[in-house]
Length: 595
Image (cartoon, rainbow, N blue to C red; front, side, top):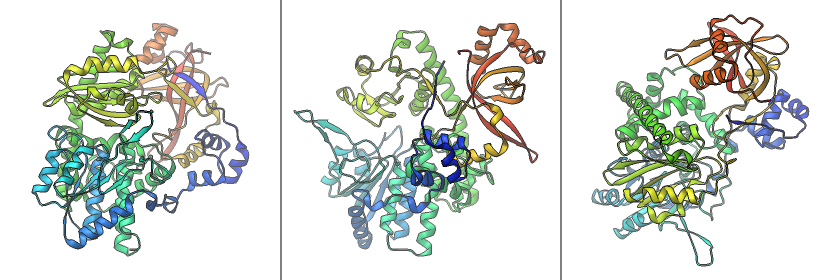
């Protein structure tokens, strides 16, 4: 069970509520997000596009613009090389659309996950050179491609790097950390030490978007304004899809970008909304992260991400709908394959000594290599441990890792980089390639040097306010919307209710995976409570604490007010709207009998 922790930050909540005309509980939640001071609160609640950071602060942008201006004027061929995930696809499209509007002779290549691997490689560079490319512009990759960029330079090519990943480093003899930057003609990455950009948590697509802002600086024509407004949708899409923290300017970008997605003139975006039944619906970050985004990722995993780029480029509505349908079908297939791979990984852990490891390294040789990251994420969620899933590919072992907050995955991996042929990533996620003979040494080293404690691996749920359900009104739920968009770095707020009695329940959903209950608080007020979590584990909890008969009677509806199932729950409130009528309901997030 997760450890419950109540946030206890101090502030003048009533004063903040009066100043910004919000409920005092909303004021408490904002303080829990470390938003302090009137200016910061105002930006959190009402941030505007004009509040975004100055793109000229991104080191390398002005030099990159000088190069692009010169190459465009000379009619030189420019090739954009992106990546096969959501961020790579969106950043590639942003640069391609922007450079072509600027008048550049530009094309784009997205590496094939299996044939090319991540980022730049000698094959892609040689292919670009043979095609007459003068200048390569990377997006969402390149910061770790020191050798590949040196090769491009040896062929006489110009290289611009736009990336957002961690800068590789090594240590000097006296222990000083030294960045290993590629010797490109311009390097744009907010994580490089000499960059003065105030927020380094932006994704590759936002870096690309900022470069275009500098490129078009001074051009305030309607066509340029419309272009940048359109491309904002793709920057927001990638920010959510690449699981960036929804804080600082990311929050503003996503808030405005979500609106732009629904009104976008891009045939591909509209087709993607259509095939997923989201046309004319208010979009949230959830829809990007769990419905639309996976369709883009699936094409890069099981086919070629060039198909997703083609979706955004097409101006034919019928063609767009056909491609979007193919992407959705690929994602449906990916879900089934992911389920099988996750089940196999769990069986491997439970039936071996792996379950005792603090860092899980799971080798699934027959698993499709593109699913390693998703499966690693599922295993990380289940066991709350840093997790690597490795698969066997044509070129050796490839894998992806997903981490927990207490474990900086990239830094820990860097301590044994001699085991890999290639690696990269950041604090919470990473990719790696290695010989099959290195797997066990990799597992042993990471566990021996992880530095993780039992407390680090304990799942924690931070309760915003221990608030009785009786406080919740429809107006309060509507006010919670001012805190959106929710996601990484700005989770949906949760509350706690003690001593909740369960009166009756039903199992709903096509697959019988949703629980709906009628519950009662200590004052006798009753509420609808929904649970979308693991029902099997929930029923085991009820049986263990109240007996099998109590669990069965719950679904027979025979308790009335003499309910024996009385527990504490973490919940968030919601409004169920049906045929124009609103009804309050609570969504259970976690539960316990502990006092």
